[in-house]
Amino acid sequence: MKKNSKNYWKLFKSLTAKAYSMTEILIVLCIIGIILLMVLPNQTSVISQAKAIEAQAMLNQVYGLQKSHFYRFSKYSPNIEELGFDQEVTVDEGGQAVYKVEIIEASTSSFLARATSVSDLDGDGAFNTWEIDDKKMLTEVIKE
Image 1 (cartoon, rainbow, N blue to C red):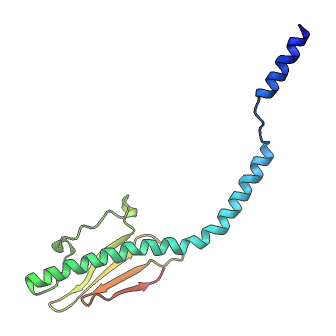
Image 2 (image 1 turned 30 degrees about the vertical axis):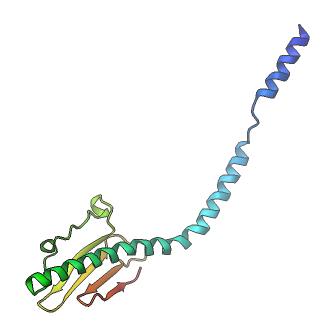
Image 3 (image 1 turned 90 degrees about the vertical axis):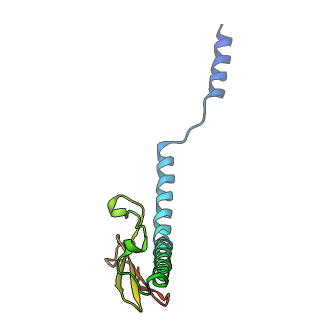
């Protein structure tokens, strides 16, 4: 009988999984955290550049709508809704858009539209702002 109990014990030991200690797991998590802290500041500029593409795309759409309106009515529209531009719901209102678009000025010969970030992307207190005019000059007024 004693011989069988030894065999069962050997079988049990061979079936149990090897595990890491809590100290080993904590050390690995600390190393991963340190690596993330080193990489994250380098990624903020890439993230803000990617979000600026949203502003550029929306302003290019406003430009196209303004040109279409100009060809029909021989003047640019001061009203963004009249153009048919559908402003996405911004992040501060629970949506996904980072930029709010508005028409700053419009006349019979020119217009100026602006896209302003509704959140400070890099935490420096400046809100990224882009503008486009009737000559399709897309400029970054306030850099992020």
